[in-house]
Amino acid sequence: MASEIDICNIALSRIGNSRTINGLNEQSKEAAVCSLHYEPCRDSVLSDFPWNFAMKRVALADLGNPPPDWMYSYRYPTDCMRIIEIMVPGIRFPTSAMRPTYEVASDLDGTGKLLLTNQNDAWLRYVGRVTDVNMFDALFRDALSWRIAAEIAMPLAASGDLGNKAFKMYDNMILSAGSRSMNESQEPVPPDSEFTMARLS
Picture 1 (spheres, rainbow, N blue to C red):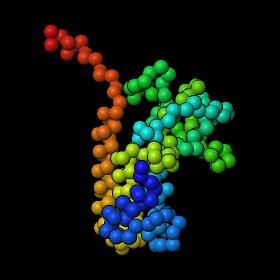
Picture 2 (tube, helix red, strand yellow):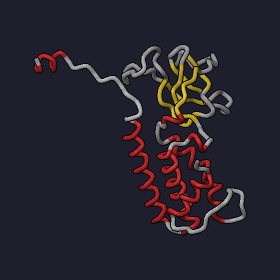
Picture 3 (cartoon, rainbow, N blue to C red):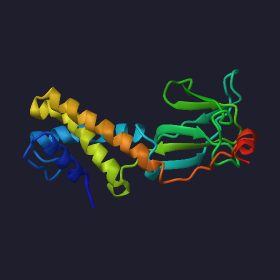
Picture 4 (cartoon, rainbow, N blue to C red):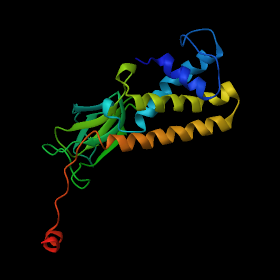
């Protein structure tokens, strides 16, 4: 299975660096730069797409005392990278009009995030932070290595052009992820309208 080191070594190769690292803590410039960028890049890639392997569904903790323009105030999950939706009870594929509205806000102390909504007993579907490399799918690992390559190109290769090319490849990976994700779940087919049925009959 791939490891953090494998992902970083692929990123190094993508900027033309022939050196490989054996650990993020080793005494080399390559390891220091990869160590600096690995976690921020991982979290950034997680937040850029609704990855199925990182999808979570949780019942939110009601904190009470909502502001006057919202009915409920919930604790924002600390591992949330990207909100997908506040779930509609009993409906797996709600339309956009059916989904509860919400707002992300700060608590009174400015030390934590809140999720404000009018939905009682709210459940949240979101992309969570995943640190176990064994959970990453192949496309995520590929995208992450390109994202790291885009960040390390300047400090290691002194090439903004290489960084731009790597970031473009990363964007392509995200587009590919979107196409593949559509094949990993099946949404219901909208029924034909009465007008369409009449024309076909």
